[in-house]
Length: 314
Image (cartoon, rainbow, N blue to C red; front, side):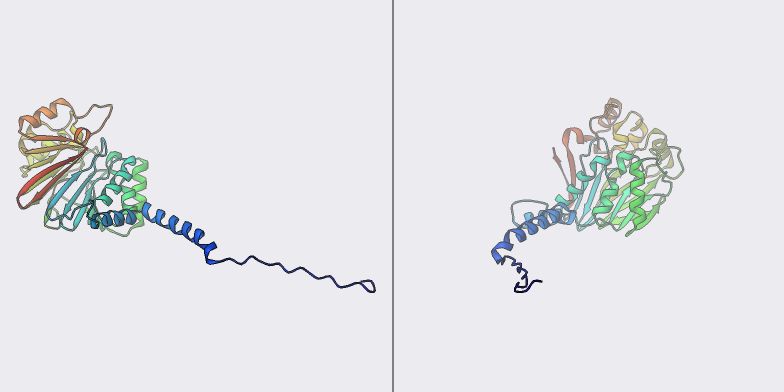
């Protein structure tokens, strides 16, 4: 440093002073992002639905009796059963039906499921099941003791969620029962091993205050005739028509044994053009009033104080 020169001074950096007014837009954006993320989650959807209900403008109603919701998920199966404060799900649609199912549960104010039932591992019955198990609290996973495995991405995804755990798993045998509030399900079969997944479907009969319903998965004529010959009580007021009303199901003897007052078919646009005419004619001849999700949308059967009401949501 030369004589007479002055030492260099570093200029001090001055940061602008930020007022509360400067933070408010950022905080507002963060809060909005948090609300949007919460609203997109399953608990968020349930919360907003319940808030809408409390406002008096609409939303889900409290369930005091039994309700069976055959959800419109195209040519696939997804059935929500509610009894009082309890709810259970039978199958969960195809892969593209996962959002449909969880959103429908949220709209009904379902915050948890007592059980999820896999009737059989075909993709149009389990495609949305992994998403349901991931997003909705589930107490138990139920399947047949004779359930076959499937070679599909949907089945692999379901197995990953099952391995994750967090709920009990139960393999049901013929004669077993399980409850949903006051509603009791009795397992009718399968009571032997079949080579295909359809005939291996879990078949359950529901009873509630004198009302009965039969859930058949996708059983076909081979299994249907086994049930008829077994001597089991197959009679039911409501039949969930097996295998989407295909020609291989709803055989004459089976329909006569069930003798349903009402029949519901979960079906949608498909190259197989389901339901077929012969099953429809057999059901009509048996005196059944037929509902179809492709023409009626979601069908809800409600039983309260011995009275049955039916609503469609197209």
